[in-house]
Image 1 (cartoon, rainbow, N blue to C red):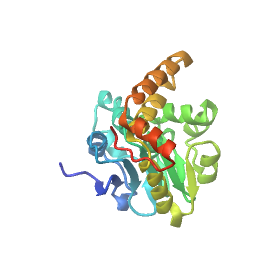
Image 2 (cartoon, helix red, strand yellow):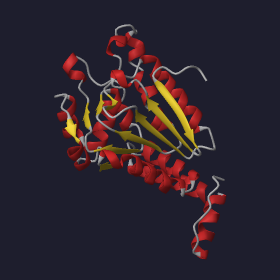
Image 3 (cartoon, one colour):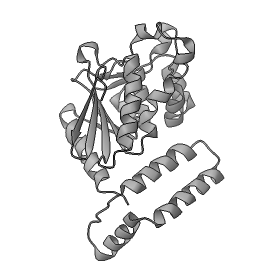
Length: 257
């Protein structure tokens, strides 16, 4: 694998952890790192041995305080207009992706977290899209995912003021999945991974796909997509195993087939 720019990939059995690893710069995300993140998620998405992916930041101060601002001035406007594609990599990945958030999650940090499926946050987290304060707006999906997740009014309040919100508010408006004490965040993430690991990877992948792709469409379209996915899962070994395990009152052993 090409040497990573401020990223670290680790494997522990069927769980892959991607760490934003520039703690001395609050885990800033460089322009090359955005491309590398997209490649990592694509590779892990095709790896049948991976059941879940955790995205986190090194140290205790930040998930990431944002991108490499100076690097934006070195890129052409047309290239910058396509930044959202790389940051959407966790969303495209068929595996469950968990963002483990501590400290600052600003700018592209919050945008990456929004593209994940779950956001487990410590109670010291601060979240913001502060780009307006340097004469810019979020450009990696932040305006769109935030508005869809918390509503247009709350998104305007955060984006147009560059306002920071704390863990309590983030949980109240549905921006994070769970808030725990810093000392408990590792066990909270492990608990969620264990829960997901026990489920059918095929069902999880299709549930994620249906939710992501049909959410913005008309109800009729969403129901059609859901029905097609439901019918497809009917033919899988995992479904047959699930039904058998239910009848036999035992835990199912899903194989992803």
